[in-house]
Amino acid sequence: MMTAPRARWLSPLDSPKENWVGLYALPLPDSVAGLAAGTTGAKIEIWPYGEVAEILHLGGYDKEPPTVEKLLKFVAAKGYAVAGPHEEEYLKGPGMAPGPDDYWTIIRYQVKKK
Figure 1 (cartoon, helix red, strand yellow):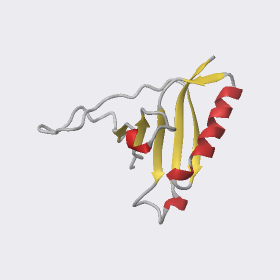
Figure 2: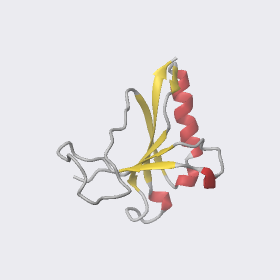
Figure 3: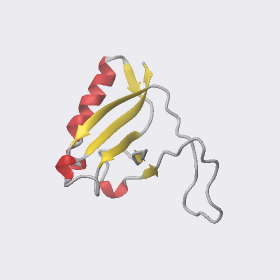
């Protein structure tokens, strides 16, 4: 079974796009113990989670802000605060869907009780 690629965006989403810093990942099965000899530019690490809040966004990446706002309002209404970077899991994206209107993206935040 293929797992969806992910990204963690370390810069605030309201900052100019050219200033965004992202970490990109492909989840690996537990049976993977290391990288092949000579591999450069990649590393294996475990992303911590704890409690999370997430929402499925349908559509292009440029149309995410209302979905993000809905998730953040939900988090606050439940008495939580965001405790980690903006994360996206790309279920359907470029090369997997006919066009941006058909993209499926899980938007996720680590959260903690206020």
